[in-house]
Image (cartoon, rainbow, N blue to C red; front, side):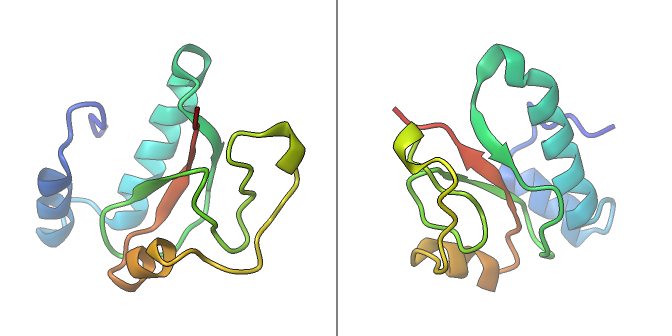
Length: 107
């Protein structure tokens, strides 16, 4: 069991580099932890179950356009909007192997 609550990005990277855990295992741990705490925190608007990457997983604010992942900026008006393009930050994260955990809530 990975304690995602206290895991820093640096420690997560060290775990991946030492092959103690894979990026996929870490991604699954974050998704599971977010799902368990969602009723209390409401931090994520949506989670991404199967995202490819070899690095530390990352969550993106829902204002960042992500190709193929619903992006609503926390607005009901944009419900169902799935961008056909990525904002600049999304491919930069993907290029260094950072899989997306999900989209976080916004004000």
